Image (cartoon, rainbow, N blue to C red):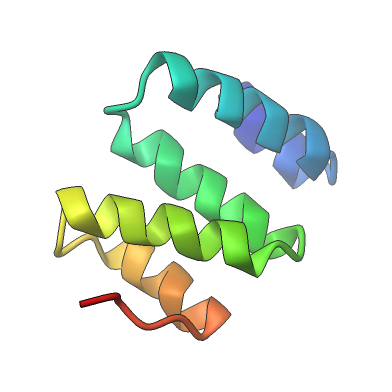
Length: 79
């Protein structure tokens, strides 16, 4: 995955842009959404990461990685 590689080498901005483009064209790819959320946390963008994690949890309530993102950003699941 090119976005994951870019994030690993420190080019999180490019990784975020790639994943945003990809998730627009493939909105049902939960793994891509979670990866985007993880990279947003690393990039210091907790509000966007929280929004994405909540979106994933709507579709997959037991998604461990999305719940981990919420824990990292101090977000609670909206009821």
